[in-house]
Image 1 (tube, rainbow, N blue to C red):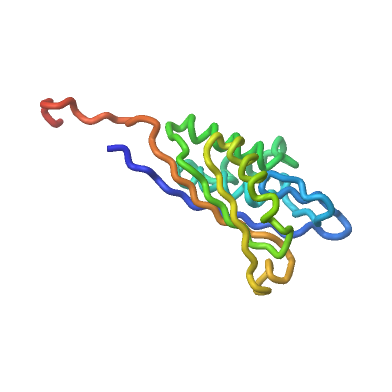
Image 2 (cartoon, helix red, strand yellow):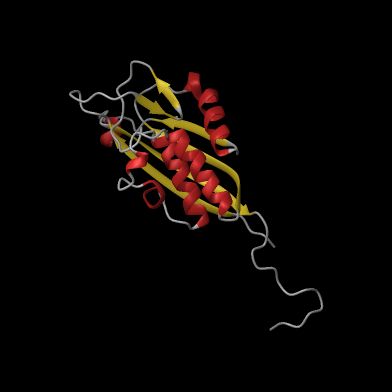
Length: 174
């Protein structure tokens, strides 16, 4: 029997300081006029949490393992590109992706009007369904104070095929 596996990913980024403004990339989308997030790559914590959940489900490390700050080739990289690469690595490891669900916590941007667009971009990158929801923390913590954004994701993967088939029917066990 091929059993599915689940994983969890969490990513947090602070807003970039006023003296070093950055564009806001969130959920695979550019948000015109919004304060951006600090980070080694584009700071897209939604895409990063999704990639981390995929790695977690497969047991093949985490975001830092594959795209860490010690890897200069990923400086400024798009979260969508990282998610696509994560999906490729997961499939190369012998898994298929069932789905990914992400929820981010922030006071802004107003996500509802662009939810479908974000889900399409991320689903295309992962070549699997990705759903995204948003919430606030009712003014509590760093997200409530408007200091940054956090995201948590879950992923469901399953083996593409049985890596170690059992004995043939009627064959003796070793």
